[in-house]
Structures are given as C-alpha cells and as structure tokens.
Image (tube, rainbow, N blue to C red; front, side, top):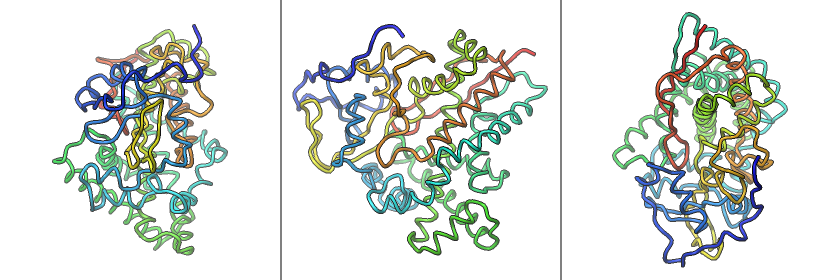
Amino acid sequence: MDGQAHTDNSDQKSAEPQDAVPTLSIAELEADPHGVFRRYRPRMPFTAHEAGGYLVLRARDLERVFRDPRVQSTETVYPEMRGITDGVLFALFEQGMLTSNGGVHRRRRSPFTRTFAARLIEELRPRIRQTAEDLIASWSGEDEIDLVERYTAMIPAQTISGLLGLPLADIPHFTRLVYDVSRVLSFTFQPEDIPTLEAAARELQAYVEKILAEKRRTPNGDFLSRYLAEAEASAELAPLEIIVQIVQLIIGGTDTTRVAGAMQVALLLEHPEQWQAVCRDPDLIPGAVAEALRYEPSVASIGRVSREDMELDGLTLPAGSFLMLSTMSAMRDEMVYARPDVFDIRRTDHPRLHPVYGGGPHRCIGEALARVELEEGLTALIRRIPQLGLAGTPPKLQGHSGIRRIDQMHVAWTN
C-alpha cells in the first residue's frame, strides 16, 4: 500500500455551525453516493436526510456509536418514520431480534448463536464448496449466464435452505419474496409501494408459518424442528416472535450475500490484473472478499436510535434521532484507509472486525456464514473458469442505505 492513513479524526474538524448541517436528498444520494459522502465527510461528521434522521459518515464515529450505551437498535422508529404503523411489515421490526434491545434482544437471538458459531460454520465449507461446484457444472454447454440468478443468488439460498431444513424446491418462491420485502430496508421506496411490500411480507410470513406447522406435525431433527420444540417448551417466545425470527434469518441469509457475491466478481473482472492474481494465488481470496465488501458494500448503512443528545466533533445529534450509520461512507474514509477509492485486494489497513457486519451486541449473527459463502463461491469460479469475463455493461449497485440492489450481471467464458 502507498502512503499511510491517519488513525483518528483529530484533524477532521467540522467547518460548519450546527444550523448549517445540510439535508441531503434521496435523488442526489442515489445518483452518486460515494461522491456525496466524499464531499461532506471531511467537513462534518453527519448530515441530515430528507426522509428523516441523520447519516453518520466517519469510520471512527461509527466505531464509537456502535459501542455507545446511549445508542440502541431502532425497534419501530424506522417503519413509523416511513409511514408503516401496523401489519406484517411493522411486525418484522416490532417482533424481530435485529431491531430489539436488551433482554428482549438476547432472548430472541440466543436460540441461533450456537448454530451460527464460526467453528460450526467452518464445518459447512465442503458442503458450500460442493454447492458452488454443482452450480458451475449445470452451465455445461452454455457460454454466457446471468451470474446473479444462476450462481450468487443460489449459493446463499441453498445454504440457508440446508441449515434451516427448507425444501430446495421452495427456493424460487421464498427468494422472490425476500427480494421484494428487503426493499423496505431501503429509503428509496415510496408510500405507494407499501401495499406491495406488505403483500410480499404477508406471503413470506405465511410461508414460514406453513413450514413450522409441518415441522410441528412431523419433526425430523433438523434445525427448525429443534428450534420450534425448544422455543415452545421454554415459552420464552410468543408464537409471532418464533415466526418473525425465521423470517428475518431467511431475509438476512439470502439477499445481502447474493449482492456481495456478484459484486466481488465484477470488481475483480474490472481489475483484470487482480483477477489474474487471485487465479494464480488462492491465498489472496480472503483479502479480495474483504476488499470487495469495503469498496462496494451490499449493506450501505445500519440503523440505530440515540436515546440522549450526542456530540460528534462539535455537532449535536438530538435525543431520539434515527441514525443511519453509513458503512458505505465509513469504509471510504480517508482518515482510516490509504487511497480509499482504489480497489486493492492486497490492502493491509482493514480493521480487525469488518465494519460491513455492524458492531456491538447486534453485530451480524451470519457474519461467519457470509464469509464462507463468499470465499467458496469465488474459489470455485477461479478454479473452474479462470477465463471468466464480463459480458456487456458491468453491474452497478444501487442504493445509499440499508440493503443495496443489483439486477443482472452477465458473464461469459471461452472453452
């Protein structure tokens, strides 16, 4: 790496008074999020957002806020702010572990901690590797495919199906619903979109209810059978809580890794010397995965709420504020990363804990699983199709908050 990044924000001072904190529009953020963050990050620690709340921009501030006891998960603040006050969408926030706090959060999360422990997830590597190999083998006779639909969407979907005991035949059904429902985590949906999102959430919840009813009638020792039996025996979770935790796991276990898997391949192919380096030396794969997640994260921001007034670099975030902790901005912060706008798989200044997975007690429970899926998906491609190339326009991630979106990504190869 050339140059050295600073290690704190001490010389990154706010040049604006409190009343000059700008309100950024969705349109400008969607048009060029990296450019907008690059412009404002040296001047101020946060900006306001036209839909409500504040975007926190700097890496060191994100680290502090994740650990600050005055900050908590959002509970129902976000949906209420976006005009969602009841229904199945509202219940996803009201009843889920991702948005709850304290003892409620621990009670909802604890049934899953052992299953998603890093040691146990590592044992899944051979199975995930075989999934990737089988998907590539299914392209026999073809010379161009949509990598999102045929590969990066299927690896996490098949993995979460295997972990939870969902029928593989159900993957097209529940993944379609997941991609619809996850739009609620983006600031780009409009009020007129809410009925469509609600309908998808209702259908996804009904699917989980049906699966759990089948496990209750004929338990077979898989994860969902055990989870359901233990949850109902302990009586610590209400029936709706039991359902919502599984809905959240299915959403979290499919959409973000689908996007990240496609983008890491796209970035490497857009930097052919780095693709070739990975093909020659698979030991570079973990660094390539980490750098792709930094450079174009699938999760652009993580929501929190401030319980008290908080000062960041001389500016005050008022109590009760909805905070978008912008991983997308923080992971291009010039005060932490050398040459932050350069994609470099040999980068040595990644923090010990990757910011894309959040922090504190709500750090992503599926971090180890996502990392294994991304590494094994990339490993299978470089081993089987080192001559891979982009076909057509490179994909572009869309979104500046929550889960970002990707459409098609066509790749081709020569035999």
